[in-house]
Image (tube, rainbow over all chains, first blue to last red; front, side, top):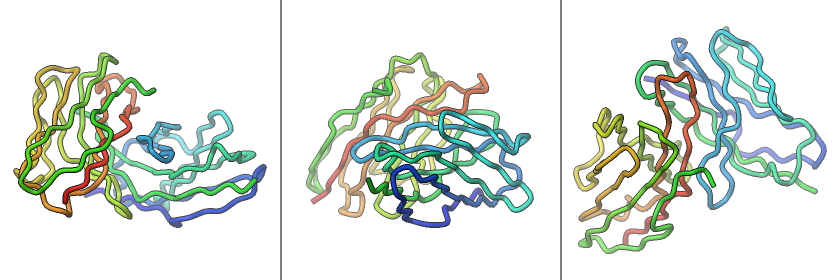
Length: 113
Length: 114
């Protein structure tokens, strides 16, 4: 089965710095990868996804990098803000059916003003 | 607001009680999910419904009983739970078959079994 894991349980950064959250996955047959953000008291919220045929995708202040050779995924947040403080989850899945992703453990991002 | 609403937000129940969690979405999604989120563990998929039909039961104990009367509503019926069932129960919905991988989550029900 799929195994997805984040490298660090906690990441502390200063406001304005760039943040990088890393994730490893085990199933080389995964078709897509997703990053979710979960703020305290809320459910996970979709940030960005990337297909396995891509190695980089950019959103608003976020960039996801995919390295299929080493089965590694990262989320880069530019100019981190206090509002970015949350738990970040990576998820991997295969297409077909219900797009059911397998979630890794979260990384808690703490942004210090 | 994500468009997925869960009630109640908090629930405390005894091990002999029977209660139900409710999830509602009006996003037009055909797939709905129940996840369990415990401290220091990844989100655990419990059940998947696609077009009101259960397509996945991830080895969940029978004390959890899902019900999907239509594509907009999902219930999780609880009975004779154990203290280790205390967790945040999250409902999500998505639209499979469109190329869109995004799942929309509710805010969850924080369940405490005493």
